[in-house]
Length: 316
Ligand SMILES: [Zn+2]
Image (cartoon, rainbow, N blue to C red; front, side, top):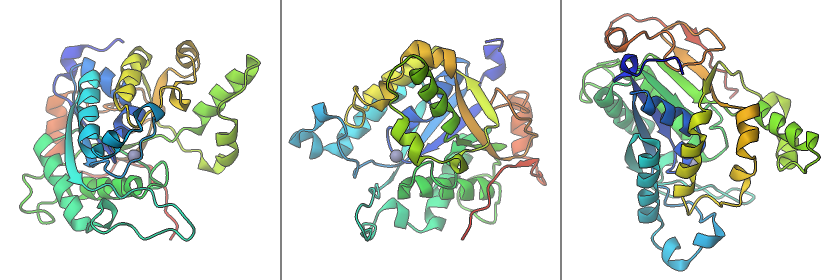
């Protein structure tokens, strides 16, 4: 890959996710690659996944449904080992995906109803403990409109913004400014490419319906593409470890591996805010951070200024 593992030693990447399994479907091969290169990778899972449905028919049994939280924690541990990363649960309660018209209220005590200052401070404490140089989270739409995914964005951005502010969180550890935060790209172009490849081979595309619902306006700006095809196998194994959540016959596994490697060998990210310059299209989440010493010095320096802001204005 042209990168020396020793230069990576102890650079730190924190990936914030809403539920156990999200880490394996968003950026998993990237994490496996960085871990392989000596980067310390920590997945922060915000909720317990307790309101997730069993999405794999083979696992839809009463004893599974009744013990879903414990089973999902065990699945998470398996996925974590496969990806070679560390992982913590923040312990908030899954908000569930509200369904119906009108939508029912969110359940009492769920993550999306927790006071933002409480959840932010808890995540700041983990940031100050782990001291990531780079963070990842979801875009302002959550990537998909689950209340926990949208709140994952909100809390991550609030924690990124205030982790270096001693006065904002005086009892949550020593200030630390992660140097960049990226969104897992919600990448329409990738599915268009797969769709067209299926059609070119005269096959039925599994993405036709998806793409109809997904308009051009949903397209995002990709700033960073991580070559990680060598880790697609680990990604798939990690996904399958979440056996209650992933149907082995489902859409995740419909694109043959050789086609993926040929057409889209990267996972893609969108820089949101960075204290070091971002020059699209980058091929490294740590671009601009030369080594651990440089990163550590920057992250603890006062008066750092934002060098890149790719955030999209959210309409009220
Ligand atoms: Zn999720």
